[in-house]
Image 1 (cartoon, one colour):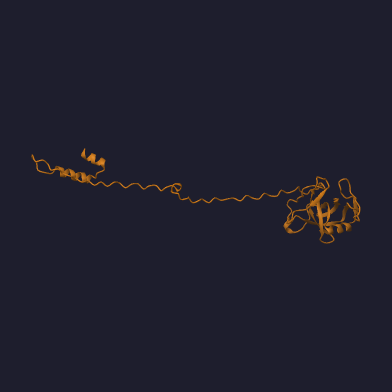
Image 2 (cartoon, rainbow, N blue to C red; image 1 turned 90 degrees about the vertical axis):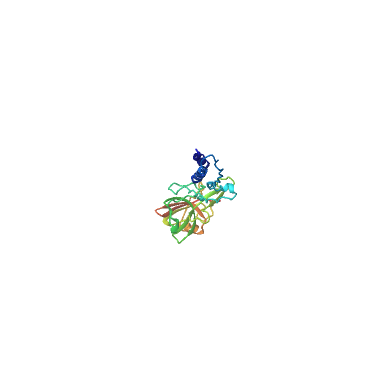
Length: 225
């Protein structure tokens, strides 16, 4: 029972045995056993390591974990209606497009169809450069406004040869002094190929340009007041 008591108190077994032997030694008889004073040193077990304080408890700011920030892609500019054989509105408000056309390889004819465009230059007596245009209304009028081409820096432009028998319908007559138009403000006066070359070379001819087989076969001028 003594061993059990000391064991519960955490006293080493060797110290207990020494104490017992000392208590039991002495002469037998009536002489009282001397009082034995035992000093027991108990070594307390090491305290468990204290957990490290959390960053928020220590007052030290925690290192921020870098997060990847994705840059949103810029929205793509919507393309206008494609060039087809359908005649576009003379005063339409959007630029026509030519899907699949490679504008990085220099000037070349647009796809076959009717382009609302501006003839901006003649590269020689046969090849005309042209660009799609749109009409920007002013003051709410149907024919009061101005035409605009692609924005600055845009490479959307075409060039195609004039067919030998190209049809040119002028909105100001062949001498440029008349008003020869129909109810849609389109030219009705047929003029020569040479007149077309001269007008196109000035760079101010706005028209419905019909392309067939990579050639310009018809130019119908749009009247601009």
